[in-house]
Amino acid sequence: NAGVTQTPKFQVLKTGQSMTLQCAQDMNHNSMYWYRQDPGMGLRLIYYSASEGTTDKGEVPNGYNVSRLNKREFSLRLESAAPSQTSVYFCASLQGRIGNQPQHFGDGTRLSIL
Amino acid sequence: DQQVKQNSPSLSVQEGRISILNCDYTNSMFDYFLWYKKYPAEGPTFLISISSIKDKNEDGRFTVFLNKSAKHLSLHIVPSQPGDSAGYFCAFTGTASKLTFGTGTRLQVTL
Image 1: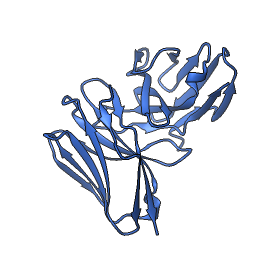
Image 2: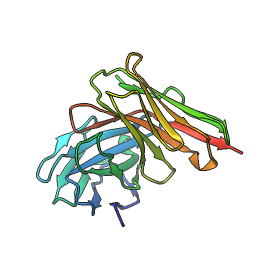
Image 3: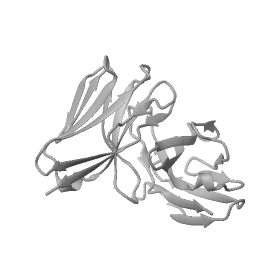
Image 4: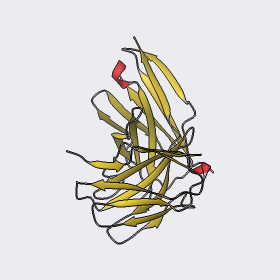
């Protein structure tokens, strides 16, 4: 029972390098989300996809791009990594209406940019 | 402008006693209120929720209270257990398909 799987779990990048964070869910959920968590800031929404083929910006989208490859997979790309993007990134998925149903989270990708 | 605030970054409670975690919000358009629990190196897991039309919801040792006039949400854990030691995040949702999270409170339950 995998749920939401994120790869990689850890990554160190140099400033300016590019990187794609992968997320896959096996629960046949329609909606998928990317968050970042920083100390004292809680989780902030970067991008989300309410259904296959659609994506929308969240609270902090600058410096990121996303692709909803199919119903299962939702990737997050950093085209030119900056130290301010050092964070823990969480992917989540949801079936049904948000609030009425809980989001399911992966265990995170810890990204350090030097 | 932060719409959701958890003013206590940390809380220490003795085992067996009540833990009370608080959350304040500014947006009156939120219609669902949730609590998530998070252990280090893991993703958040859903704990309990309440809709805006209610003022209380219970699930075992966990009770969530909503005071709409004060724009205040709280989570009571009774009795507290060592396994409850974790981070707790409140989260709110409105008309869009998005959650707004609080900054979190780290609960430590001591023996």
